[in-house]
Length: 618
Ligand code: ADP
Ligand code: MG
Image 1 (tube, protein in one colour):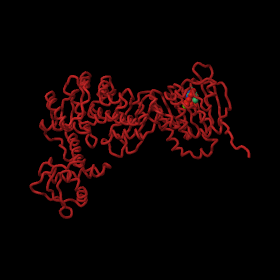
Image 2: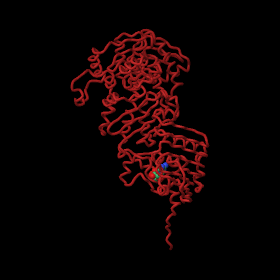
Image 3: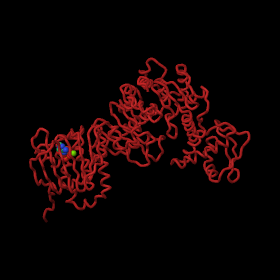
Image 4: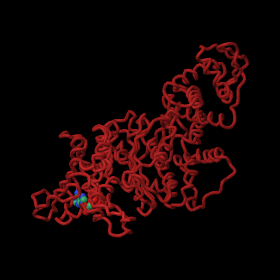
């Protein structure tokens, strides 16, 4: 019998291998744009015809190539970016496999024009199906132009698999945006069928984000930035109110490479939980940088999925960084309030990460945790600790040696009593809170003062109290002297009977009495007597309001309704003891910054910022 094994001819082997790298026009867009970036270009133009099926062309002003390199670059495994396996673990460029151009040349017709700045003449090369048809010297501006024409002209089966122009164009725009976001200091443009779709000037990341994702995000971005020995994160998240019903504006980059990671996405969503409705998606554009030795970018051919040494550290890091950013932004004078637009230009607001903040953040728990890579577990504990919120704002009573003292062991004292003790200690140092317009509480803190919205704060306090009542220990009921009957509309009666057990756990003593009627024998101890009926009707109103607004489960809706309904309204005069209680209890909450519905509970005014406002006469 004859031998049966053949060696595949080069172009066929290339075509098969190309399947991994070039699946659609957008794959070529990504590879060509990345090559231009790697070549040091500062201006990069992308031209598309027929959703890339007819033409994908990238023109750059980068390094250009020599005659020989211009021919070599189409060989499989031709790359100037790695020389040894070791390099693979320290790779800082976008490309590294030397497969992209070989793959593109195997499945299309390519024209390359390139010239180095020091050369008189450039080279022109034409390739079909991996075969060089023509190479000659030519006049050319410095830099490189690569045109990929008629993708899959020689692989009809794959050409037939391409989607509609609209779908392929969407993929192209996605890739373009990812590269453009990663390199805001480079100029990019995208032209499709002769029409300019994007023209992105060099600028800051913020400008790039806004130019791509929409001007309406301009005042709605929260800066994220944490720097540690192990890894850094920087970028933006959208303020909670910009969360959308559809996923989309969410980007993660690791060492400037766009990646997809449902795991890290989860970390972000977690940091936003409670601030946005459950089925909505916040914007984020986040860049994580860490030593390439901790990352394996080589696990997926198109390099969008990567492996990390220790995913859990990354998760905790991302989550904490975003929580930290959101908390900082809610204690920074918010840009949306009735402030003069001029104030928004203050350095402290437009460039929140000053040297002084760096020092501040170096003292936060997140920083300390991540300077020691193996201590990820420490962070959650301390950042969730209720004491932390209080301490960060009001500062600790001065204690010598505090910084060097070893971490205190778990004390048997409950957190609340620790806070109480500290509060007592500190109260003498601080001024008594002041009520403003019977609506806000002004309280002096270490770095300035905060203005607390009395209703939003109380809503947060009640919300967490009621959550606890449902999960752990039912609320105390105050029995009424004269039980009242409550006659409801049929639909409302149904809601009440469905929620009877939860209502009882929350301190409502209700009993069905005839068809649509209930007897109210008692209400939660913190509701004023005589108000039973109004209280239940009010909470029903709230409950129905929430059912149309939000996709929350019934219990959550109930708790939010009661909290909202029973919270101290604006217009209620508060004594200083009452105000102090609110402050105390607010900062003992797990999430003190926002009301259950995502409103700020307080904003803070820093001495620094105040000083600047006075200086500039604003
Ligand atoms: P890789 O990017 O992984 O090295 P490619 O096939 O994408 O592999 O490119 C092969 C080589 O061709 C690159 O290493 C680079 O030296 C050269 N090259 C590609 N595109 C350009 C460009 N736009 N400008 C200058 N050199 C380029
Ligand atoms: Mg490349």
